[in-house]
Image (tube, rainbow, N blue to C red; front, side, top):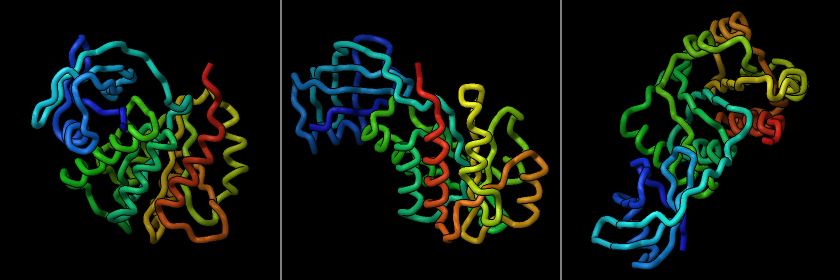
Amino acid sequence: MSDRYFVETPIDGSQARLVGTEAHHLIHVMRGKVGDQITLFDGLGEEFLCRVDQVGRSDVGLSVISRHEVDRESSLPLTLAVALPKGDRRRWLVEKAVELGVARLVPLETERSNDRETSAASVRLRQTVIEASKQSGRNRLMEIGDSVRLLDFVTDTTDDEARLVAHPGGAKCHDVLGSILQRGSALRGVSLVVGPEGGLAPAELAAARASGWRIVDLGNRILRVETAALALAAAVMLYAPAKS
């Protein structure tokens, strides 16, 4: 049976309870029964080995057998700010960003893509984050920030972060990564910007450059938003120093 489940309420005692979609999955899909052992995580960094004590119609009561701090996060905090694509492409981008270890995803509003996230869409994206975290073994949930204007985002970063904007005609990506990310553990984090299908407007690129962002080119083929975002995130993760 699938043995990793997410609980919304932080686990701080000897008892835990599954409710909602997670309880439904255990009860009705996995046919969980009293005595089964499963792993819970609450998004705060720990895993909990638990035993099923009670199975109701819509909830499951469990006893905590043991708790473990299991850190599967990247040593290089990565923020991915992106003009999100539509539909399944959006969900796929979020899912793979979780798997790659992105710490924070920020939906961007740009001149050529001004869609704001609705509350319903945010709920769906968070559920995608939970499902991807269950699958990939992450015990901390990737944060999804509020939608923000690109012009505001590029000015709201610190000088000691590596800050990269994906855009045709920029410097070669591997050259920039090699020179900036060799700082390794000296970096507080990395921020990436990927614009919409139509690209960033000249004024947006100018604002990013004026704020110290480096413009990087991902190659001579035209990439969709989700491809560009994940390719750049994966490239950055290759430079993350190993944790001691």
